[in-house]
Image (tube, rainbow, N blue to C red; front, side, top):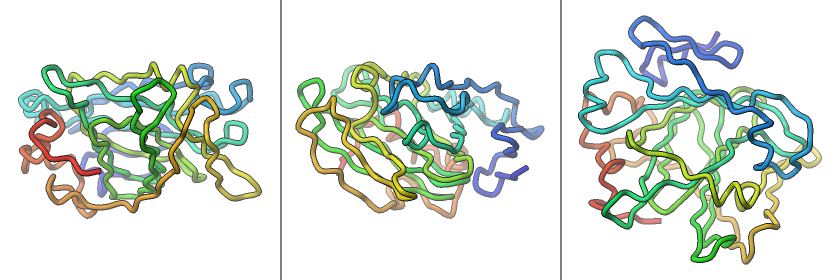
Length: 256
């Protein structure tokens, strides 16, 4: 059993791929993404592999904070991605784009935080035509690190390590993932494979005119009050205005 309270602030523990919650946090039943549901997103859709790919715990909070989350229109989720290979490919989420905020031209952003393990985030910005990507980059994050998904980008999270990956995210409460284009193209713009004990990025042949994959270092986002040394859950009661970028992206200057 791994105690995650130091990095999460919330009283939660990880055991055998499942989370348990302390008295201050109402227990949440996870949704499990199975291999049969996710086959379309992998390089080899017919390959055998573990059946439980990842668990999604949505709307997690301390009971004393729930009214505050509702006031600011936010939701806090936790995802546990199991380790292992699906064929040649590291286990991952199926990936999605973000919805456009009504009345604006901006898609909702999102922010992730790694509690345990290591996350490889593939971010991609769609081009004007289906099957084209204008930009794609990778960020690797470890315990305590935060990664912002800016407006205009979709993303896939990959667990390329041998232990479970646990991550949290803040997002607008009325956010609904957009799976269509990534599903139609059978995954993201690139697949992360294991070849001869090393990792290899392979372009998804269903995309056309792919840009070169960029690699960016993880960074703190001081403008949003995000620090590697501080659990980001605490922002909801210490400085909720720092999370306004999630619900009002049109008010901020976004730099790629």
